[in-house]
Image (cartoon, rainbow, N blue to C red; front, top):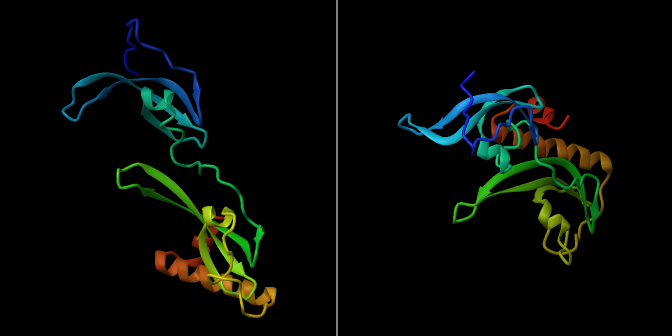
Length: 178
């Protein structure tokens, strides 16, 4: 355990809870790349999943660090929602993107099935968008409706193609949603 600082500006975070982090003890100052100590403090924390990691205090108090990465940020659960010609089947995937200025944001996409049986992945923002045409094409679906058995078969084929592109066996790919 590192020696606890005793300055007026120092705030002891031991025992405090920040999102999924529980602060266990003081871990020393944050070091620069050259190894010099800064005025910021590191804290040994335990995530709600059990992982232990040293986190800068400013990342705890500002909410920049919420967990070790085990917690998926909450998103609207659209599973089962029916909008126009599509039904949200499930299998959400989060993707991190950045704006041209470097600001990071997260998008969530879902597997949807059109009433004709075609399967695709679309963003949740599009599913929730009002006045948008929700189907397999850019207008109302012109094809005849298909059976649930065919839709299930098409979903499995779609997901196996996604797993193949990711280089992951299908059963391991599917286990992330179980």
